Amino acid sequence: MGNDKTNMIVAIALSLVVLLGWNYFVAAPRVEQQKQTAAQNQAAGQSPGVTPDGVPSPAPKEGGPAAPAPGTLPQSGPVSREEALARSPRIRIETPALAGSVALKGGRIDDVSLKNYHETVSDESPRIVLFSPTGTATPYYAEFGWVGANAGALPGADTVWKADGDLLAPGKPLTLTWDNGQGLVFKRLLAVDDKFMFTIRDEVENKGGSAVTLYPYGLVSRWGKPQTQGYYVLHEGMIGVLGGDGLQEYTYDSLAKEPVYGSGGATKGKAWNGVTGGFAGITDKYWAATAIPDQNVPYTGVFTERTDGATKVYQASVRSDARTVEPGTTVAATQNLFAGAKEVNAINEYERSLGIKKFDLLIDWGWFYFITKPMFRALDFFFHLLGNFGVSILVVTLILKLLFLPIANRSYVSMAKMKAVQPEMASIKERYKDDRTKQQQAMMELYKKEKINPVAGCWPVLVQIPVFFALYKVLFITIEMRHAPFFGWIQDLAAPDPTSILNLFGLLPFPAPDFIHLGIWPIIMGVTMFVQMKMNPAPPDPVQAQIFTFMPIIFTFMLGSFPAGLVIYWAWNNTLSVIQQYIIMRRNGVKVELLDNLRGTFSKGSKASAKN
Image (cartoon, rainbow, N blue to C red; front, side, top):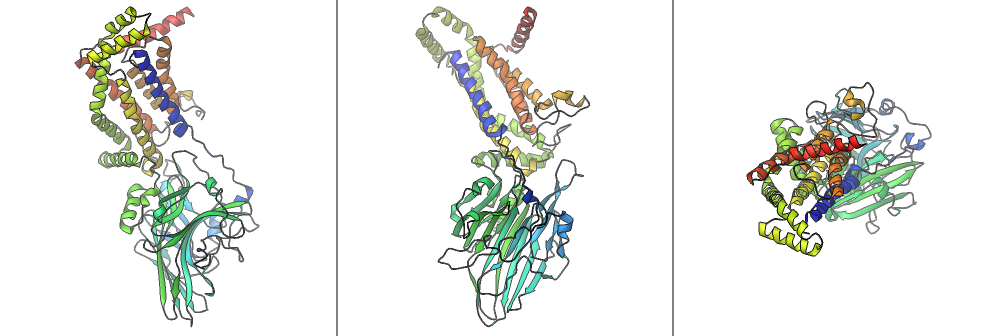
């Protein structure tokens, strides 16, 4: 492994690892081609006589009941959101972060939009809608209550509650009341904070003459399989931390492969019995809805998928153990609902203040969370200090360069020494041109004498790979990076550079096609990579030289579709590497051959054109 040809092959191999690995796992994601069926565009409403499958039945030895399913599809088609909302009397939800309403018919939280998040970078674009009521094309809601056997009528989707107010807001809770006329009075106290957390306290007062046994439950139900990003580095679908079993993640497709759950064969799913602590819900890339049980009470958590007509219904639910309500007594159960944006600081604060077990895993930090989480913390710190995530990326990159300075210095010093002994290496090759073994031995002796590591040039690449991954993950999964501007035309660091060479970066009067993402910043990155590679003499092997010449072009096209923040990082990192290598080479008395190499490259190109 001592000659420079082997050294070049190692460098090429490492570069290909970056190219092919990232292209496979990140840049070329499997985007699921979802087609919404006609039945998904039907409305959803409650119908009596539905086989229970929503909230899990307890294990047979517990002998408890299941909760009602979320509903069945009527024959009529979907209606507008406004018409669906008008089907039930409602109490308005108004917080600094949320807008929506609670349906008094059913007591569901089924109308939530996010005030501070829009579909595009423009604040004039529509707000992100999280929850939608039954009757719309894509119902999505949260439901809480009680299930039980031989307890008389229990609140359901058709129950019309009475409210003691007309607004649910921070510091202004709401109480819903319903009397079943058979001795049980139900109360539901709803509260919401200034972010995304609801508190639901269900109470049952037994005015009858006999005890009843009830089970508190909470669920999040989603009708129709949503469009997903389909990236390998991102989980979308069912998510939960379920006691000692820890984090559980099921995509919509993988849930369908689970065994039949419950009776009837129409429901598939997975249950965790007798767990304590955690949550269960449904997550998108940036938004999530989770039912959070009492963290100190055992419960059963379930993910299910069932088919209603031609529509898939996905549900995450929690159901706590039995509560016995003696005559003349009241029993209460408190649960929480998270419904909103997965803001890192908010999630961490909820985990701390409410004691929700591993709630931070709602954000998909990945297997390398020990790298991605500190990376986010650093970027977030400098963002609050400087007010721009793009500038934060530049500062963090500079700090990382300083941290890895000893490794990079050893690498560049070794490379500088390699350049200094080029004449001796050429002499050895000439002397033993017919004996490869002796040539290798002589090279190794020279390296040992001059204390040269022939593969030292690989270390900067190896060091950069985990940083590259961590930054990509942070840019891709954290909502803080969504629609975060830099300067000029970069208004979203988490999206590709919007400019395109195909319409001369906007100078031509037509939109650029989508099949090639090659904007200004990817080209800047390619130029800086080209310059960095030209800091060293070209390999003597013409094939290797051609590979190294075209590698910046390959990376330019590959990174063209990556988030702009990542491309800016790579360009800035290349620039710092060029400066660093220049200083080290000058200190070691080695000539910097950048200009000579550039002239050589372009003069060869000119001669080749002249010959043609």
